Length: 220
Image (cartoon, rainbow, N blue to C red):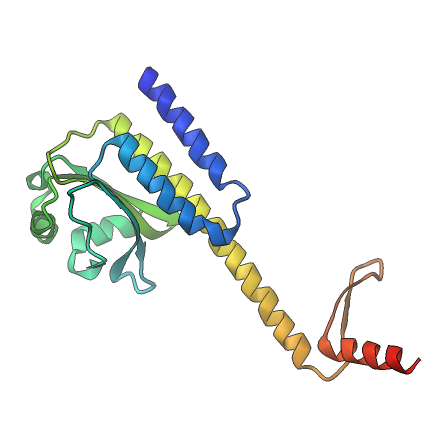
């Protein structure tokens, strides 16, 4: 019970720290949270990977690595691992206490994990708008570890919080890009353009309007 309450408090704090966080600070906050999670959950590595647009490569974006533990690979050619790739694109993760526990069809995955010295791991898809965009990987290198269903559920909740933060960042960046694009179009026009609300209040004007206003004010 004490562990569950402690986790719920941690998860609540994690969620709260991303509320109203400016999009340009999300990445730094994720990095800080992974460090705190790695230390609190006592895992050797915890890494956030981003899936490429072609779904053929996983690229590391943030990682916490315990002292004396080798860092994870900067990128993973995901199309080599058909078993894991299929599961991830269907929104399913996987976990193991020993790579040998994986099914025979995951032979390529086993070989890769063993080459990386990973003895136990939990790998969870990070989904944005119901589409897999990356994965959160918690790994043990120094010793094997058993993962209970309750632990897996908790890690999935952490991944959901991170996914929500990334989704809001994407949305904010898309809105900013849209506004920038609209501004470029307005300013490229030689006509005097003003944007008004329903009450007739001027919300924005283009550069031609501003020049016209300045010139006429200077002549008056």
